[in-house]
Image 1: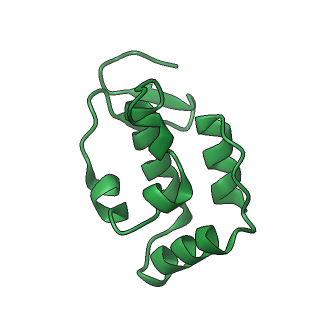
Image 2: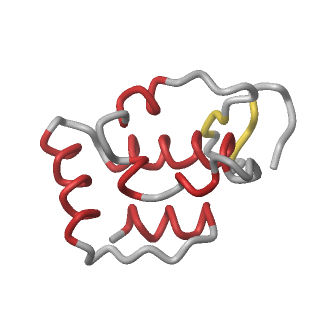
Length: 98
């Protein structure tokens, strides 16, 4: 539930955590040893690159984000990649803070 709530907040979507397909993808990634923090990282990376892209924002959905390319998304280098900072929610490596 927390993962889908986070996705909905970040991507301004309304997915349900009760959907069987969504649960299947999330459980599969947990079974592979990924953590909740990994899911949030993937969401953050893909939201930062896809949200304002008309061709790609439709892929901000559980079946795409948490499917077979999950590990690739997790390890993807993103320009201005977010670095978690305890005092500030997100500090971008390019020096721009949000």
